[in-house]
Length: 191
Image 1: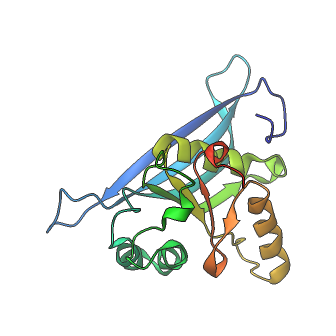
Image 2: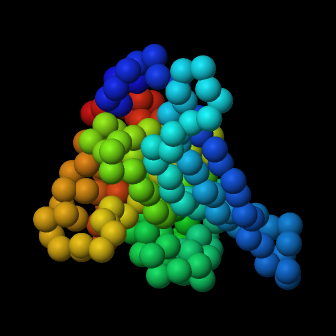
């Protein structure tokens, strides 16, 4: 795992739990689900892990083809609406350009809502490991979107540092400070 610091033989565990949201008027129509994720480092000889990072995520199925993507995210929260408005096309669905080149990519979007790396584990790439792991599990042929905002201090210095952190992981800045990347960036061709 070249971009993650630390012992390459280390063992990590990803725990995901979910909550599905649906509308009674349309219970069979997929919308989005919320996911909580915990990334733990497993100690030798133990099944118990040490929490490294955790986060909240939203999975929107078929956002690439759903013309109501922006409206549905607006119904959820202002942060989700801000993210969606930065990545939609004129039809209201998620723009093709966030998914990478070619038809090999699907249409699901994973939105990283909140991410926290415990202080003693910062500066080792674990935020990227958490987001990458969750996205590969939930939308292996989709895209990832996030809005880098540090908790508390929203001044330009900390925000810029966080934006550089995600840009270093291959994320591209869109409108409104939102960053995106295909789930599997290695499949994106360089021009």
